[in-house]
Image 1 (cartoon, one colour):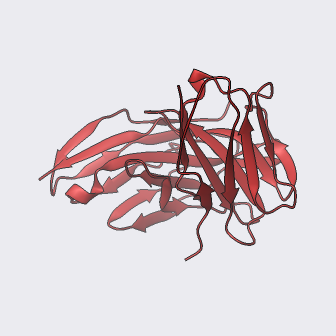
Image 2 (tube, rainbow over the protein chains, first blue to last red):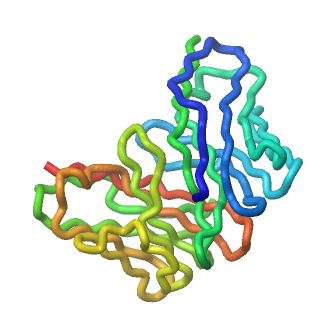
Length: 114
Length: 114
């Protein structure tokens, strides 16, 4: 069935380091793809999105490109900050019968040290 | 800025008691989701509404969980009786009509069953 596989954490980086969090998915067709971020004790916030192949989503220095050939949507940031410490979720919008639903990976815990 | 409202933020209940959570989606959003997030895992869909109709409740434990959205606006999720394994964050999300739109999440309700 449809699913998403996300790079396992936790990931610990020093401030200003380069970040990559891998995400691959299996789905019928070409779903919209999303990255959400969750800070401790909070709900999920949309970080960025891409709705079609080769689209690049970007926000707050984070980027991800929709790669249909590899069914991937890897998250990158060139220089992380302490404030980026959070859990990151990759989520394709997958069709299930007549419904469309976000299907979440297990999340990647990122800790950025000063 | 419009937000998804959830209450309560925190709930502690005893095993075998009934508990209810409330969600008010962003105005005009036709689709409403309830997700359950166990600590350290990604959110899992419990039920999805389109207006007042359930479009997917395949993962809802119907022997103890119920959900309604009577007027197609706000929604209530109920658990009766609560079990220790129900301890989790319960997240509500909403999205507008459209095939590729993102979902917006509330702050969640943290349930602890003792």
